[in-house]
Image (cartoon, rainbow, N blue to C red; front, side):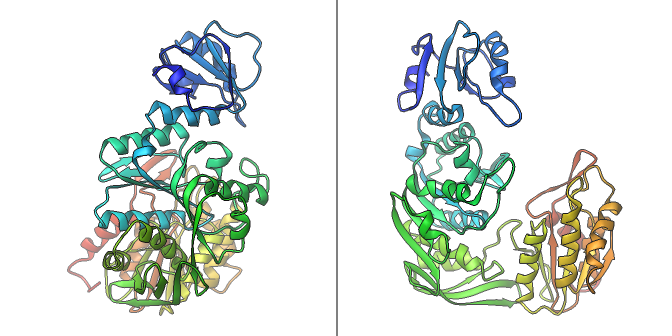
Length: 492
């Protein structure tokens, strides 16, 4: 594209040298990827300043350079100055890929917890309604059978627009994406206008070095979604909702558990039966019906309401809602794996004390005969996390099975020894089985009627990282293999 066309909708830039009537082959912000004819964006990061690579970029054939600070010598090519290179990159990326969001219905979800679950619920509801739907989030991006690897909950703006264009060209009509607070802090979604913006909840998180300086900044970043969407869907029960919406410019729809809102869940109860474990409640407002949701925990009532609020606005029929939600299973998020009517097996991503306590406390609400926890801890990470996870499991679980997670460059036995320090502060029973596959086989073989078994730490991951190598390890696959191995033995 011609640089002048790319800049047509952009703001906050000055042409320092050269002209904008030049062809641009690509947009690049990584000096290692510079190629002939590209526009190279110099970014000042916490670890690296890519202004130091301008000479290299020119030698590789960059047609123009974007800078955000003064440099000693201006090379003899087109130079553009801006306050924030990544902000300008976001505007130009949309133009470079011919504004794909304009032909897509875009649904953005923000919040401290529940983004992935809510996004997955909406995707399943829309697809069941015949809408070709893409998703971008924590567990990657994709549509139909296409999987696109990403490295952040919300990718960089160039990647977002590239994925949007790929989806639009493939016939996708709706895209559900998680929008993190970091996405607004670092301008990954600058200039983007979403059709729907959803707020799940807000609590202190992601505050500290390399993230947000304080809670006020965290909240302010979250709030920007509601100045950049057409319709906002918000959790009326969250204590920060009013402040979050202080400067909103969108229409607002609300959801609540028991309170007054556009969509309400009443009488939320935990329930289980052979082949099903989840929650049940009655909805009032946008939908009026009883809903059974195949996701454990009362907190999933809010995630369900967020998803159903969007579904109602997008004309998903009640019968589709009931069917989809009953069979709902979000990969790696309190995900049930049905292998027996005698006990329930759950996979979850909980990998620190806070998330482990939330998971195990939730499972306790289902009054299992035994609560069995199978977990490890990541290698080359804080020992305090291991102590705390051990203590939490010892407090909640009837039996803890200590095993491997991603040991990285540590010995599994050393990591387990650290977890033991925490668990010994409690009276909780535990055993050690360093090989995770063996640990899973053990809990399946020894399961008792009415048990609830949690395999946590891996969740959606499909690998184990050992000595710098990622080995295939999808717990769903491992479970299926173990069940086949045990076939012909005792009844599952």
